[in-house]
Length: 105
Image (cartoon, rainbow, N blue to C red; front, side, top):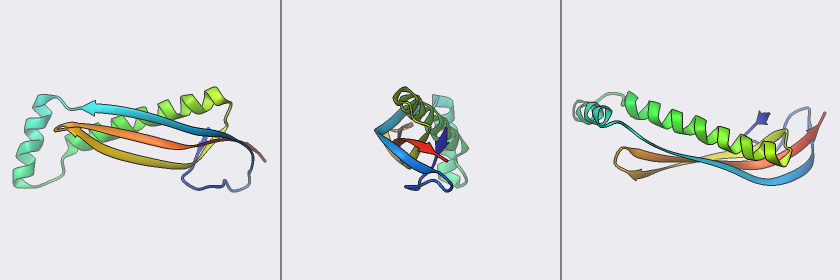
């Protein structure tokens, strides 16, 4: 399935708009990772533990969105957007949404 953040797809024509599709994931880090990240915050540096958490959440959210698109019969999702928010310390929600469409070449 094609995924794009643009409204169109090069070399394809959107023949049917199926509707909004979305996926969401909430992830929390283990207390040990939270402690390591807290120390890194004091001395500076990349917080790899949180980066990994957000990437995992993003991938799960994308899969949920694609499953919803498949259920509608889509072969592409256009105009995809992400939103990330903090739920509590050490936990984040990633929301992804777009428009499910059918295309032809």
